[in-house]
Length: 612
Image 1 (cartoon, one colour):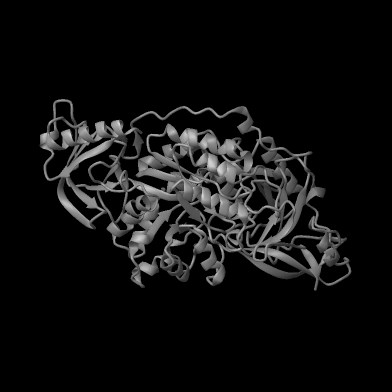
Image 2 (cartoon, one colour):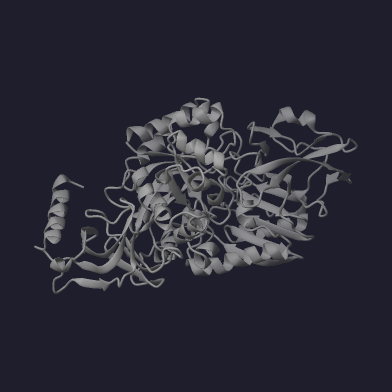
């Protein structure tokens, strides 16, 4: 935007504020939730011209003309539009436009999107798709350039890759706000050239570096990571994580999505330890379509934060001005004040926070949850909807786990593989409910006819990763505990952060093959099989991650997957979200990749089965 254009805008704002030019929209007699001063001010009017606020005060009658639209607030609260500080649209299983359709009527008027899911499938072309779609939205969508594509070079076969040159190129794009979460935290504290070059390109562009320190170690590696440049972090789960990050100058971004519920433990840093709440942000990170439709988005996160004993105004700050200031956007958004975008919510009850009316960029978008405007039509290119490439149709044999053959492509580990007559110990992935980390379990197992079978009594199922980008035909098989699946059950999914190969978990090899083939036939998505029947499925043909249908439709289909998990015996809060992270080899303790079982603490391959 040129200086002349800015000058024209500010002159118009002044003219409306002074009463020389009528406003386009005036909101009368509301309670101003003033997040910048920490006050709630009654009997407040707001005058809006174009996309921005010109006047906030006791009486805006001087700005009302014959064509001015007037909204009577009638004592309702006037709240800044909510901002999601860190999220992945792809986790909602819908396109960006459909995500906006789902969340804006609930009060979300800004999102900071890291599209590293689609980037892991399509590279910079996938990021460009998201940036272009963001430009047409009626709310603010800022894009962070993914920093770790792939998330762990050498530990998986990527569908695409991004490096410092691509990051530097994208930093010049409009609507790019910074670098997405730097998940390769060992690369930062060990001085990896690629990671430091990407962070340097971001700093040189004057933009924000997102963090992702997924280790409980708050010693020298943590200090080295912070010194490297990441400015926020959403991977904390404990009180001590919150305290350490804020003390070291980071913004603590607390997750409240579908599977990662980290607010309750970390908010105690504010409610019990009296840390300055202005350094705390709220985000959803990964949120499922069913959660969006049935429970909410950032409004849900605000309600939950308030329920932890946080003052409503403080909780609202965590979802508005704190986020805007962190990304250097406070002159434009995050507060109701002159010159800022007119992003205003009308809310009756702050304690039970729900938006009755939503205004974004000066336009009334929604009333009582119903859209009042049309959203853009978006068509994805054919190459974006044909991304599941398997070498052949899968069979039960692909999911066998031999007791005596290598379970990794790493030659150095083949000597560790025992003979089937030896006492056997299995390295098993242990699921932790509602958390991203897993446990590295070492459990005794027995071979049966030279194979390792599932153990329903101990809740040990098989997990497999099927390579789907290059059609190599590679299938890695391991063991997992925690899903609670019964006999003849299987679930397959191409939502497999961050590699987005195909993950399959099950208690029967033939059912695992059936689920995987159902997903491949749909060009991506999730499918649940029980007793030989597909009992739940959601088709996600865009990159194997997103549907082009509306969120309500996707939510209904996604609900069949959750219901399928339950029908198969799982009692986890959100088992498909838990499944989706089991291939994310940068989060401790144990993960699976197409190259083998990964010790995500020491970042090395280990065998699935070893001598006792």
